[in-house]
Image (cartoon, rainbow, N blue to C red; front, side):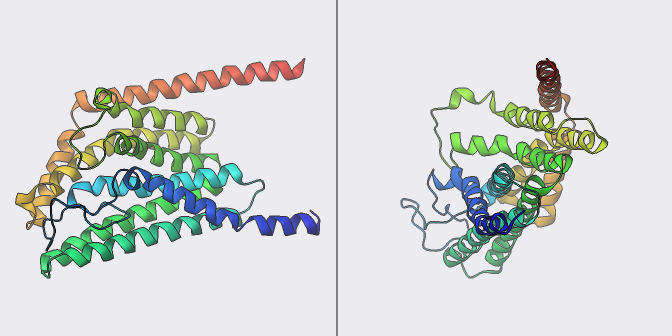
Length: 304
């Protein structure tokens, strides 16, 4: 590679910071485009239910914990996909530049939301605990997003596929957040409700198709995808049920116990777990077969 080419590469690399930031913003869009105002807080002070709350980049509320996780994780996946698609040569510089842009957006989102939420909470120990727990959830989700971003942007296909299946498992809820905004009671898309539980399985199946199953690592990625299809809905249900129960708001051990019971129940009922798993397998197998057929045809045409 000559000096001019290397110089152009160095000039282009900083643009990946913007690409990563764009991915982070894209992950937040279901919230930002549907009324990004702080939800009414049970521990709030001086809030007027008839007026919108202050602008926040994340929906801090015990009723939106799953949504906070989804917005951040999917943002990391978007950043990774953009970086991988635009990366014209091997190396980690551009991938970590994209990660830097993603981190800037998500750290700003968490800090801005936490600070704004703190300004409306009552001066009580419960308020501190509430804010710390929500922020801890957001930080853990952001860390997951950053790992997924790096895997998709820089890892070999098996590792990139792992990041994709994580994003795909959250993708169904991300799309749902677009169609059914938080804290709204009506939506023009109510007819789609029966289809929504199958969005994530289809996306995970497509991620498995892209990854393939030709190596042990890729097979393991597919297995992880199936495990996520099995457990993520149960975990989401458990978190939403436990955190959204006001009776347990001051009883964290009781909340954890209730959430565990809900998770065990939701993850062991065949009528709940079998249809999504079957959907994922059908999409993955069908896609892999189609991919092989198309590949053979292209190989035959090339050989002529």
